[in-house]
Length: 272
Image (cartoon, one colour):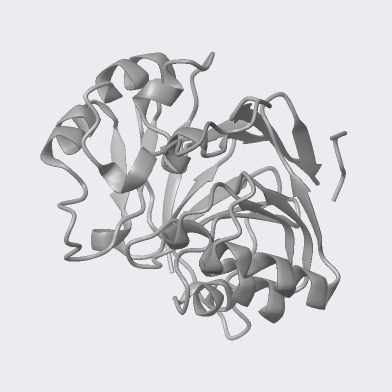
């Protein structure tokens, strides 16, 4: 697929306004972890362009969260894999907001929840394009480079988390690693460069290889997208211990919807 144009000092900024949240300032990449409960939904905004990575579970609050933030259009929506808590909310997004294109990491999974993306996309005339490692896409100043999975098809019965899309997003010199549910057994197979922000894998589940991943990435901030009082014990104590080396750790179960703005100065935490 060709490219398509479609010390930490933390300052708290209030989001507000009758017509939603103001867009990020010029030259700033805003990364927002949306509080969708026990699921993933990450919003990237820069230069008037908007990318949504996953959308939480079915019947979740993702559309309400986006509207509260003043989002009126999604230029690129990425479905990282077929897990319901990642892509279940995407059909509602497609039906509620204009979506430019859906990048598809479902690996052919057309079971009821991930499969619901296709009729929604057909109904709204939205292209659904498979994505693999080595490909790239641009939405305005936001560049997405896909690092995983490889182009080979999945093995029978292979854990879909091991095939989840891993992407590096960048704009204006700032960078974010988006890991979906891909943990260190996957990340250790990828050439990783340092990033400003890490979206922590798999809602912060236990991962013995996380300290090594953090040594390679050296993030200035980490975001855990996780539900309050979830039954999985996420985030795991060992994950929080490993993340103690990161200057700023944000988690949606405690912080709700929360963002980080990356520009020429220190990262800035922003809250709606």
